[in-house]
Structures are given as structure tokens and as C-alpha cells.
Image 1 (tube, rainbow, N blue to C red):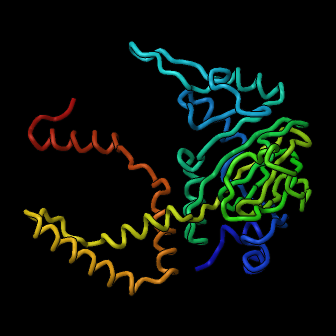
Image 2 (image 1 turned 90 degrees about the vertical axis):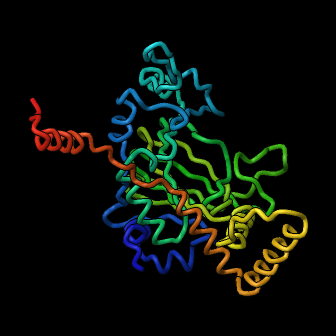
Image 3 (image 1 turned 135 degrees about the horizontal axis):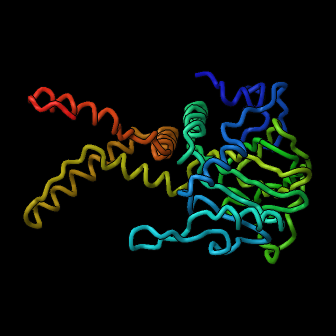
Length: 317
């Protein structure tokens, strides 16, 4: 299978996968620049619909800003639901240095969803997208680790990045690096991204970014891989696959059914390889990515109703 999406962002994909993937961070500057499926204009369009709401947006300034500071309620019939994006408040907070984060862009922006679906096929991994907008001279998230490999597509402005070393054991946790837990992990890469540049941060490598020039915007493509919980869930599914939904009556029948299930599980485990289990877990993760929404098709439904009415001798007005 080809890798046209990845080729566009990192150039020589074979070199990227052999020299960088899951191993070390890197900066890529395609001659034609990376093409982001999501832009500042798309962010404006989403926020201006009046329907955009949490949990698809967050704001940060030295920590998460309370939701009530940048959202509002709406009067809908007799209800007053909250959490809707308030454009005026969002802009005011950004003018004071806050960062805007739009979550799971692939859930609600079709071009991004289409690109990520193609990328998931290229990499065999589940993929998500997040959009960050940071004013100059301000930091978005604190030093943190992501439970994903990250491809950063710089969309607007300039942003300074600091990449720090990976965890030294497998029991690490995603999220902010706790300064009380010991010395800060060593910095291993310092770089600045301009529009069209791409940064790769391997899973678990600590990182932070600072807006450097202009209003900095980037799309973070997070490539998720599986952990032991995902492998265990995949194993349970494989062992239970095609098991009959019986309700044996009595202790002896139940015990007999248990023995048959154990024999079948032992047989399947004998034939199951670690690579096959990993592949199953990864396919399950990809299957959880959002599908294109099924169109309601009201125009087609209206046309069908009109045809039915005409055939019944009751032409539509």
C-alpha cells in the first residue's frame, strides 16, 4: 500500500519509518509545504455556527481555564443548555495570552476526517486530530507527554518547540510532567516551525511549545497505538468469537459448557501469535474512528413522498 498522505508531510517515507518512527523526533520541511486539511478559516467557520460547544473546545493559560469563562448558555424552548462557544470571550482571552484548543477535529470536519481515514490505512493505526491556536510569546500546554506519536502541521505563524527525552520505563503516564517527581527530562531538540513545516514527536517524548511570531496555529495529528488493556480486550473477543449463546440448565450442563469453552480457548491460543493479537487490537482501534455521518437526505425523502402521492392519485400541491 502506498503512503500518499505521509509522503506529503515527511518526504521520504521509507527513511522516516526507518530512522525516526517511534525512535527520535524530527523536523521536515516539504518543498511544497505540508497541506493541512484544517485552517484558521475552518476554525472561524466552526465557531461562528453558534452550535459549537464543549467538549470540542478548551482554553489554557498556565493550566485549563474554567469552561464558564469562554462559553455561554442558549435559550432553546424551555431549556437553557450551556457549553456553547462564546466568540467574544474566546477572543478576549486569547488577546490576554490564552491558547485555544479544538478537540477531535475529525469528528466534525469532513476534510480532516477523510485525510485521517487515509492515514490510518497507511499506518495501520488509529488517528485523531487537534487544533491549537496560541498568541505570540505565550505557551499552550505545559511540558507533557502524549500517549501517541504526534505529527505537527504548522498552519499559521511561528511556534518554538522543545522536545525532551522519552520515559525510562514502561510504567509512564501521559499528561503534564510533574516537577515534583524529579529533575526535568533532558531537552534533546529545539526548533521553530513556520507554516508548511512538520514536526514529529514519538510517543511518550515530553514536549512543549511557545508562540513565537504572529498568531500561531498548528494541527496535531495523534497516531494512537495499543496498550495492554487493548490487547486484553482483543484477546477476550478472539476467545469468545463464534461462541454459542446457550443457557444450559443445571450444574452439570453448565460445567460441561464451561469445559467446552475452555477447550476451544486452549485450541485458539495454540494457534494465536503475538503479532496476530497486536494486529487485531490495532484493527479494533481503527474501527472506533468516526465514520462519515449517514446523510438524512430530506430533499430525496421529500421527492420520494411526492412521487408516492402522485402515484396514489393525490398530486402534491
